[in-house]
Length: 208
Image 1 (tube, one colour):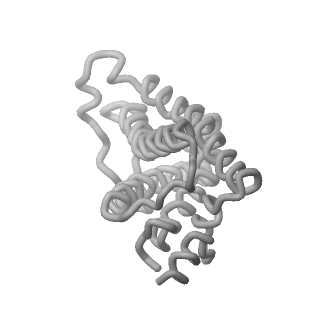
Image 2 (spheres, one colour; image 1 turned 120 degrees about the vertical axis):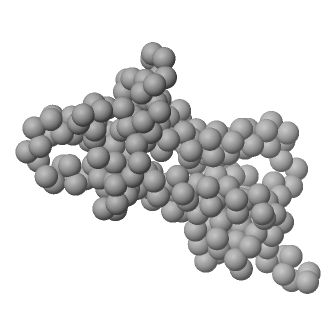
Image 3 (cartoon, one colour; image 1 turned 180 degrees about the horizontal axis):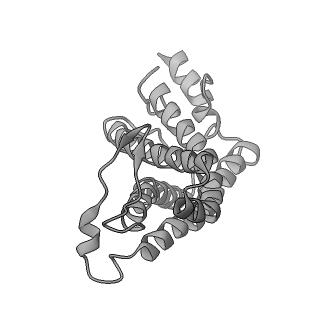
């Protein structure tokens, strides 16, 4: 089942969901490590492996941005499964706020990284921004903005804050899914698992 239904997420939505989980698992630790190790290697140019990993980080960032666009389009073009029956209003509101924040971060996180990489070098010695071997266009217009919006520091800080906010919201998202599964005994977690048909979807199929 490719498309969503009122009872369950479709294969495409599940693929987007778990692809982003994989992106986070790879990009976040790699990003923190590079933020500590890459500046000196970038100056000296004496660590080709580390600089290659930086290019991988850039590439995955662009991949996240493109996937986020596709995911947002797919979500708007599909039915969104209903909340579990009798869900308290505060849980529905909290779920909406959590998802809205995560979707916002899907765009702000890679865009802030692109911006930071665009202004970290100088006009004479720019830092290469790569997408799996293809050099991407830096956001040079940022250099013409008034301070502090033309500096590396502000985009680096936004990029870092995205992780701290995202880490908290993502933890809440995971805890809520586990709470629904183990305490409330709903199928919220099950209907997002690959290859698993939720109980409500099964009941809908039986009724059909």
